[in-house]
Image (cartoon, rainbow, N blue to C red; front, side, top):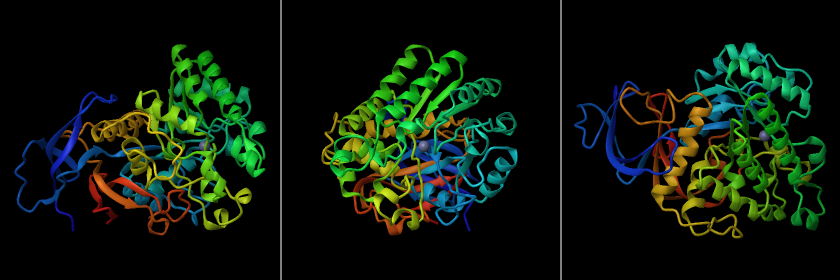
Length: 453
Ligand SMILES: [Zn+2]
């Protein structure tokens, strides 16, 4: 039985302008009453009977918000369910995830939105629903975008594939203006990408396996930017993987296009070199690119050119992954490792899974956590439209959605210990630095000492 009061003692919070990376650490106690933060101060005398977490040496961040999560329900409950994904999310410090609409059936109308919402009520964390752009995600006719928007859906995407028909994308953008919603694109020209299994480059040549060229991603990004410029629509580019896509986004900003973008932890930290192993857990779409691309994306993150880190958590049942590389499905788990992968990448001399990556600049713990707080919480909460509940600031009156981080704790990822129903992590056996030790989501302590309650 949980007590009414929850105290967080001796943790550090990062204070500074929201959306910026210039922050300072302040030691503050936090008191939560029935799920709502009621007091934040240097030293709080916690009421008798309060449950108190002593978190000295740890940082208390606003809980993470994932703009890109495949929860697999309905249709593929063997791989994941909304409930199991919510436990995985909580373990990773996420307090809100945006559920992708590539379920079976697809989330392409108000009935499906209501179904996901009703299934999400028992989730440990908040679940926001994204709607499909096209009916059944077939890329032929528009979904019931306006009806879904009336229910509060803010993000539309056919993720899993890009919208190939430029005329349809133009119409979707025109529709999106009436509801002020966001079109999130999985940038992939399916003709250029067709038949490919990994990045088109040295490694694909050596392996003799058909590659996926950069241009398939870059061409669609450019097309959508042109359409967004024409219409004034709000565009979000998902899982950017190449240096040039980031350059194109910067150009779009110069043109005044209303654009945001995300990158995944794996596109920052893993390269196509690792795919030489033909480990099916490294097969992902867009594919892992070159070290040069990783370096550009890391620099873009540090400079604030990349708005959000999103997981693209994509669970797959072993039947889809314990098979030869060319037969395996695309996608990898992300929720439980996202924070630690990014923190390790930003603070350590070498990222253990990618010896070819060169540390771009020296970033200390506080700078790294400030970048993470911005890109995994503050900015994505605004993009998802959940900033009233998520993304901080940590102050009285707000629902407690918090991730408590121990920056010095090392841990080794063990696929068979993850809360996800699937096992397809590329980081199995990799030692990471920094761990989410407690998560308070929807006002409740849902993860304590690194394990879900
Ligand atoms: Zn995608």
